[in-house]
Amino acid sequence: MSDRQTAGLHRSLGVDRRDRWAWLAAIALYVLGDIATTAVGLTIGAVENNPAALALIDAIGLWPAMLLLKAAVLSLLGGLWACSPQEWRVVVPTTLSVVGAGVVAINSYVLGVLLA
Image 1 (cartoon, rainbow, N blue to C red):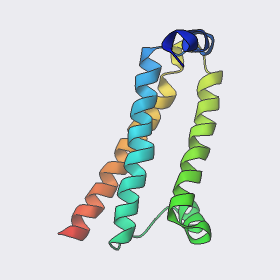
Image 2 (cartoon, one colour):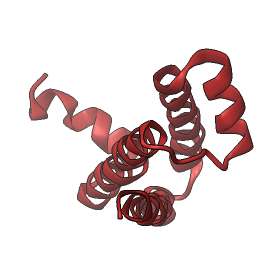
Image 3 (cartoon, rainbow, N blue to C red):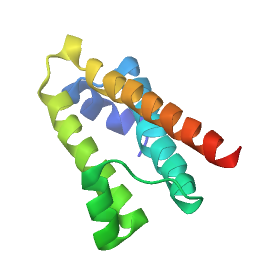
């Protein structure tokens, strides 16, 4: 699809440049960063502290659990974003980015301790 074909959809959802960059940062940090650092950590001896994630990992495995949890969070927050007033929408993915950065920082610290 070209940018011209999706322009109407972007306008109807109120997607602007700030929203796109904020969602990109949220996906990079919260989804990719957390999955990568968690996967590496668990393979070298780290322990998952999130009880929901731990139960799901035990039940269905690391990758399916991580993808399911991330999809659930993105779905809920995507719905919240879509229902939010236009001027406040960017807060949703920005907050998720900050949470993701914190999680990646903590995971990276744990990795550093385990590798030291």
